[in-house]
Structures are given as structure tokens and as C-alpha cells.
Image (cartoon, rainbow, N blue to C red; front, side, top):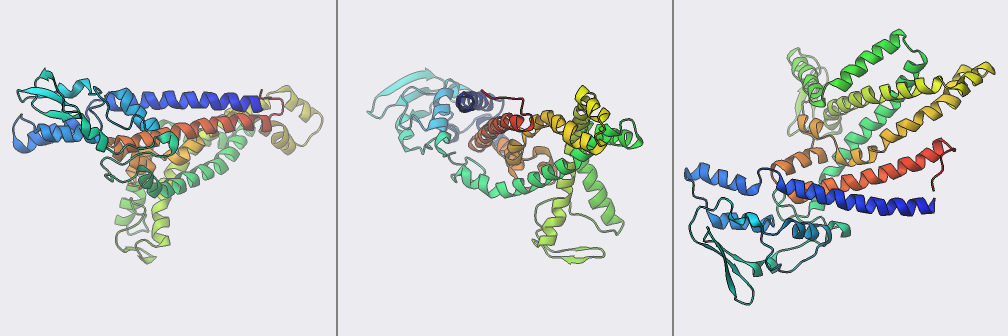
Length: 398
């Protein structure tokens, strides 16, 4: 076991670094970005094609776009190099320059180097010394938020959203497991029964439609139509109300109260629970059907073992082995949240934060969430491998 854990930790380290590097590169190479957004806004406001290069330079320095990608990644990962990087100016500095002139590199010792004609904006490498560089995510420092909470620690922003995601995802996953496993087992034991056909139909519907469809239908039925019909209804979004509201038959609901938060919690949890039940129940059913056809199950029945003991003791334990593979991603899901569902219900969790950070080009927040998700996924896979040995003693880790 010790040798296995050492080997897996080494593998996890390299996989995490490679995944972080690829995510970092793809994020910065994706079309659009803060520079394009700035140019579009300036041209729309001024009605001119000319762009203020001083603003462009300021945005480049804030997002460190004047560094080559390897330098940006190393500064984000381990906080090195933290001082001036001579010559580490991105090759895309000339893109979109419309003012005739020259690009000058001004070094700390006063030397000036002419790079290329095309812009008249000087770039002072000495200013790099004044930029705050994090200690690196490997040392627990995720840097500062670039747009959402500008110049505030990313960890502060994440911790403010984390309780909402943990409560939403934790409740939905727990309910899904408690409901999906019995449904899957009973469907397998009563194969081709009316219950099995009913649950199969519901599971196919839940697995085939995206989550935002269920979210929109839930808002339409339980919020809009119920309110118009004068029936008790559920709020359509947010984790807490901004003002008091009145529900028929229940009276006034105080904004921010426990009842208000609980009612707003029902629909997003219900949507996520339904989707998870649809997929997980079918998975348990298929795994259970495969186990029930094994020789040792038929032998147990032939020896006169009660059917309940055959299902629980002989079949269920082995049927759960493939299900553990699904649970490997639960740890990452608890932190990552549900991006679409949180966006539909305006739930202030980490999934919504991820979408907002992408839309506002807050790369430090995006990379922090991606990095933590990768780490938690690696840990979840490791825990799943260990659980295999508990469920099935025949499995040995070496």
C-alpha cells in the first residue's frame, strides 16, 4: 500500500502540473480577451478606429499580457520569477496598433532599445518590479482578483461563495445517493415490471435533457404559473430575498429568514437531485443485473439463502464496485458546483463565480477554480481506488 500511495502521489503531481499548464495556455489563447473588449468599448464610445494605447498598456500590465506564456505560468504556479524579466515581452504587443511610431524598451539602467515600428507607446520593464506577484498556487496563494473584486485575494472571493456551493451540491448528492441506489436495485430485482418501465422512462428523460431545461420548466411551473394561479409558489432565484414577500396561505415571508432561504433552496436542489437520480439509478440497475446473473448468486439461491440476503450480502456489494468509479468525481463536484443550474437560478456559488470570471476575464479566479478541481478530482480517484479494496477484498494495491 505504501509503494502504491507514493507512486500515485508522484503521478498526481505531474498530472496536476500538466493539466494546469494546458488550462492556462488554452485560457489565454482563447479568442477575445480584455484587450479586444477594451478596444471594442473605446471604438463604440468614440466612434473612431483609434484606440488609446495608454489604456491598452495599462490593461496588459494588469493581466501580465506583456509576458510570454511560460513566464506568466511560472509566476502563477510558483511565484517565480518575481522581478523584472528582460525581453519577456509578448509577441502580440503590436497587434491592433494604429498609431505610427516606434516601440521602445526602457531598461532599468536607462538603456533604450527600439524594437519595431508600429506604435508610439514606450514599455518600461522597470515597472515590473512594482507588480505584486503571488507566492504561487503551490504555496496556497492564488493571487489577486483582476476584475470581479479587483486587487482582493482570490481566496477571499472563493471562501465567500463556497458555503453556498457546499450546501447545494452536498444536499443534492446525498439525496441522489439515498434515492438512486434503492431505485436501481429494485428495478434490477423487478426487471421488466411496471415499476422498472416507469423508472426507465423517467431516467431516460432526466438523462437526455440538459439541466437548464429542467431549471426553466421548474421556474415556469412552480414560480410563475403557481403565482398566477394564486397557489403557494417558490421564488425563482437567488439564495436570499432583497425584500419581504407574501406567499398565499402562508402569509408574509421575511427576506433573509430561514424560511426564505429554504424556499429558494428547493428548486435548484430538486433539479440537481432529479438529474443525478436519473443517471445513477440506471447505472446501479445495469451493474446489479450483471451481478445477479453470476454463478455465485445462483448458487446462493440454490442453497436456500433468503432472497433479501442474496440481494444485500452477495449481489449489492459487488454491484457497488462500478458505482464507486462515479463517486470519484463527487469531491470535485462538491467544490466545483453546478455551472448551468447556478446560473439559471442565480445561485451565488462557485459555479456561477466560474461563469462570471470567464465572462469578465478574471483569469486568476478561473485558474484557481480549475486548479482546485483538478486536485480534488485526483484525490477522489485515489479514494476510489482505496475503496475498491474495502468493497472487494480480492483487489490488492501494490
